[in-house]
Length: 496
Image (cartoon, rainbow, N blue to C red; front, side, top):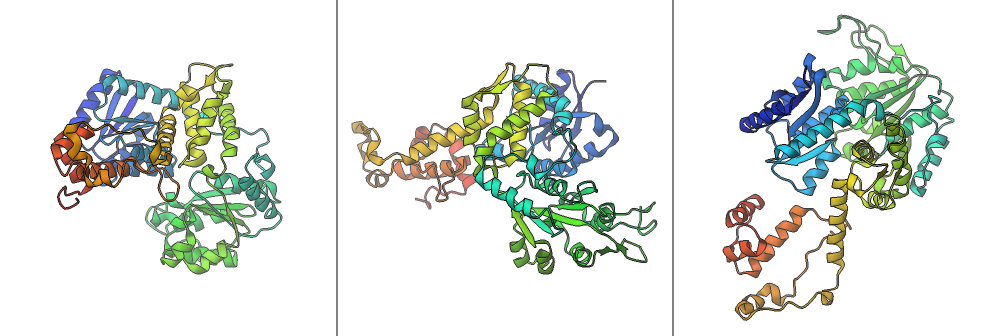
């Protein structure tokens, strides 16, 4: 039976075109007309046969980013090729941050699509094995977490002090920074190292099942409860319970969780008596729980019960010294699945480029990037060529930063032809405006959309609203210019 490719697109014309292309490539096409239908296709019996997905980002209801987030929450590891009519860097970053494997801009050529699918299937065949670190001892400890970053060394020192007690711990930090790894290392370093370590992703559980999954239920306590379930608290008895993304818990469940933390006992759904539990509780969140308390989305009393011993894990951009160590670690993990001698090293330029990138998806994004580059590399050394998307963003950021930092008197003089003298005397020219800022007030590179909007405004002002001249100087057609004006909500007359 041919390999199945799931196509998720709300445009029937695009679906038919993709179906024809995928079939021509020798694959079986499974069609879904929106994000919800795509997720249902993954949940059905034949979903296990799906080897890759082509996903449209812009759809009504559940859009492409929503599908990617749901897949990540459900633990569905599938190489996803996203496609959109808007190919800006911000869109690429958002898609890749949420787990996309590749990115194509509509209309994608058959050759580009065929290459993307072939690469996705090559990576998908190895992802299950290579994405999991292998440890000989089976228990991770704080000493096993190697770092060269002063910021991360402080985290490990704080974590080590919490090992000797059963004090509740709240680990904070952005998604993908390794909060779960720190939690497991704390458990592996303490007296409960040989006891159960139970993990619950609170953000991935449907609201109507949270209470049952955490605290358990009796047989027949609700529709579908065909057998008794002990719950995660009871499963973790004598060991450690790790509640990941605890900021996503519904308010009604927070009340029961508070009692469980305070009293050390839980009430199963439909149960007649409470159950005593002895656990070490570690929580984690990427949200600002204190702000959620102020907004009335998280109970204040529960927050102070959980936040007894806070640990903040810094994002990867604040500990760039760790990137070389992480890269080589991920390369070694992938090396277990590669032919002997395939990948041995990474070039200094490639490593410098990876250290220059901000990694909005943190360690998870870095791991995916290294894994993809290692699998697709045809030589023995990873170079910048194996990281095309990272390279494009780093080089683009450098160019913008250099231009924004250049002194005004360093620019070459502009020789104006006599016919353009009227333009040279425009208010914009007189004001000496010649450079666009590439970096904002916080020191971050501005998005392409922001720079484009500012450039369009400048051109309209510079050429006194003569739209034909504005379009010609910007190198775009008049229809494209008016479309962009509509997208940005600009009135060429009112905004001058």
